[in-house]
Length: 245
Image: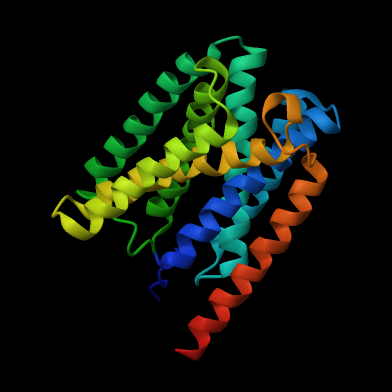
């Protein structure tokens, strides 16, 4: 029996949930490594184990489960935060070189995907080999987005709000290209998918960092709780709307 599409429908709710997931990934990742003082390597081990468990359930399922799908997305954003920070602060590669490495890894994954499938479309994702490629690209794109966002604020010394506005502007350009040009929609999807990550990440830093660093000083725990509450509400509304249509 052929499995149904395993990826959430790309609507406005999809992008709102993606941004909230990236914000939560940033605050939760920093909560483990900094607030709980686990360090980047141990935090990556913890979050990586959770993500692996979620992805096993996701791939083994024969149908789409919204809560499982979005939990896996949050897992990739949290692991992406740890990967980016570990490359910078543990391996001392810096966010620029970390971004370069992740760009090359993502391009390699997408090139392999295209060589196998002759396209990069995420509709439908209903075969296990294709799903492996999708989640690999998602993890790398979220790691890349984290590194790029941190490059804006750490290397270019922009404020967290300025970094969020820059990435929001890039997303806005992608939206305009989607509606007013004939540029390949799959290409635009992956560009938007990558840049929603630094937008959410820099917004997450804006919530958690102290006032003297340009943040609101809400802390990682409070910011994570608030983001989870908003995420749950939006997910509930999106599911209710889907079932009433």
